[in-house]
Length: 67
Image (cartoon, rainbow, N blue to C red):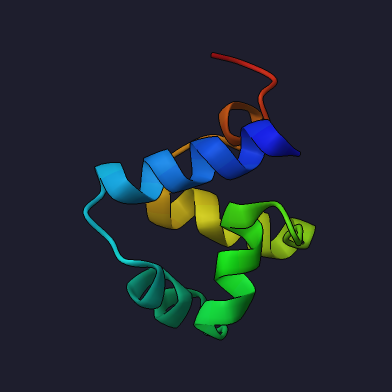
């Protein structure tokens, strides 16, 4: 899901959050979060919901279903 990785990174940067900060908010290791941004891993549905809350983005946008 290349589009997810790109939009996730862009949304995090727009909120001025580091990978370390967002990982702490999600209560996961930074390495786990980094995998989402590099496309080497995908979050669970529950994790996706939490990411969307933190970044104030819709799942549809992050997943590339809307612009």
